Image (cartoon, rainbow, N blue to C red):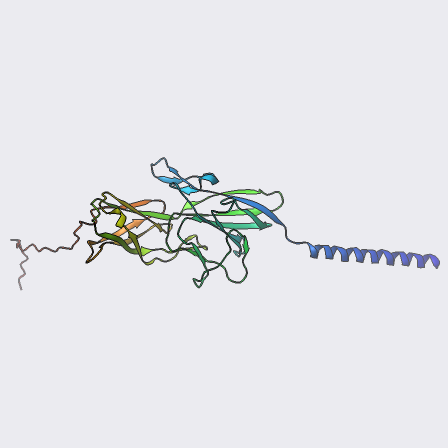
Length: 316
């Protein structure tokens, strides 16, 4: 009898030990937090000459993060969960940052999609779905909570590049990831072949322009009527002057009528010229050349009043 009691006590003790261990294991599992890792994103862009003679993009070092000799000023990185498409965090990095174009990102373990845009546009701004400014402090990786940015806009578009990159984060994955950014804009050049008059003031361009970039599609949103005005008073007396404009373009390019108005100090403009169906494509230059001040544009209709001897005879 004593032996049976001792065996039952031992079994009970073992059971309590097992329950205790099971409880401890469950507690440990609940306390485990998702892993995070530091990933350095190396951003590069540049222009080289393709075998066909046209411009194409090629990777360049961080020190050469410029286009045509002009440095880019702002870098935007949006971190999305690949499986759900949820935006997790945002970084707006400026050229004043010590690690500009080489940011150290803290990412959760798992699959990510990083969407990146580098630009030197004037006053670039993130917008939410209501086209309200989505504020983010520069050079700080910021978690997304309630609202989120869905668009990028600016007061004046200049050279801009972008791309997206899938990144896997976990134990043993790469700590450094490189991305090459592709040009998102077209370049419009107005080449004046005549002399800028002594009383010239501004040149205005009116056309359909895409003012925002969608983060969802990494493509432009609908074009709107816009006017670009350039002060050319300092060009008085010069000849063969070139004016350049950067325009966000859809992936497949687009066409728009462009009206140039050459203004003077007083009185009517020197000229108003409309160029129909101008094609604008990403990473391509469209040039409009001619005498923009001495240009006389008009639409003339003439009628040929000479009767042709052969006619149509109808018998009834």
